[in-house]
Length: 246
Ligand SMILES: O=P(O)(O)OC[C@@H](O)[C@@H](O)c1c[nH]c2ccccc12
Image (cartoon, rainbow, N blue to C red; front, side, top):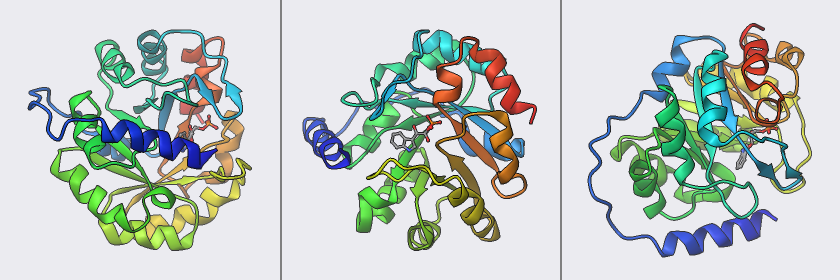
């Protein structure tokens, strides 16, 4: 599954222009938003995943407005179209409805996709260590050069060290194995403190379904990224509030 997603993303990347016109829109500070509240809740606009539709029904702008009203510190928006039901245009739509900084959640593999991310209004980009391998440092530098905050996704200690070496300030631990899709909630509680010891912000990602799930990360992660549980909630504002209040 992940290999097909990577191949499709590479094909989209190859079709992008080499440069994009300069945008005048200011970047919203994603790092500052996370640093300002410990822990910070990142709510994710997510319509589908490899396991099927999430059940989210509100359009991106309205969903994001509920998440902001519920106290989210920042937003994540899936733009991957083949499996995650995303679209690049969702970022601008979300930004029209909220003042929060936005992470572009996608499987970025082509350098042109970094400049594209700035062009479509993203403030931060997800860079997946397992997917980018030796190209990770170049993608981090390129992101900073474009004015974007890189958020590196890691799954184990080896990727953690590679992420720290790049100088990225935010490191997400994906509890979900990208190949098997199996969730191990202890991944983030185990690796969070190590990331903290390097002075970076650890973000626990994936499989956080209820506010109680946050207990295991207390003091260990500086932020939580919650997709399905908030996007699919009947009342996304109250769902966000419940996580923020934990
Ligand atoms: O819906 P969940 O279980 O709360 O997961 C959100 C997020 O972690 C997940 O969407 C994600 C994490 N890393 C990714 C990489 C690509 C696409 C999606 C993701």
